[in-house]
Length: 231
Image (cartoon, rainbow, N blue to C red):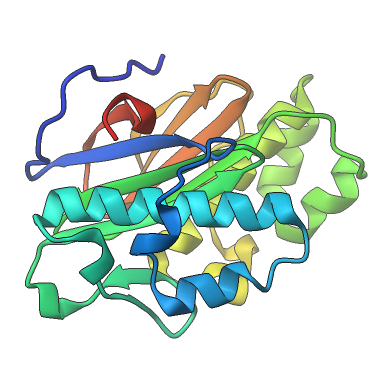
């Protein structure tokens, strides 16, 4: 069960703050703190809804990083790894790491100290695809065998998908690495707490009609905030 914190505090070592952002919201000042790179990317979206979601997510990200770094949000320099994982420039002399994911109208941002994080959120909804054929593209043979034994296969499928993506995002390689090399837990019960896998740790949650997975390099105590409650 996800419990949202009602008071804001700074993160300490061993914690991970997970922020939930409603991307349907509009912030009139959001353009004012974004970089020219972010605005250029936003303008590349063909659909207005997708452009709005991107802008809202980046606006929230900059506000959050500004709070933790005690730095004006517009001045934060965000860089990208070889495979596109975002990180805060070392020029800020900080210990923070972060990762972002979004699905439909919700985004989540994980922020932690000193160690890498990866997060993924996916909506639980009817998918217009062949579950078995799609699963074969990224699941190991063992995972496929386990999936066949579960009655609620779609829920277990999404649970597996978010775990794999959170691990790949933690590693900073995305789908440049074969997801079949990543091992996950196949279960319709979405509840892992610092579960060890391949020297990493997984936490998974059901959040409204979404499944969320968090991957970290050490056991952490995740806690949740709603962005609208504080910013």
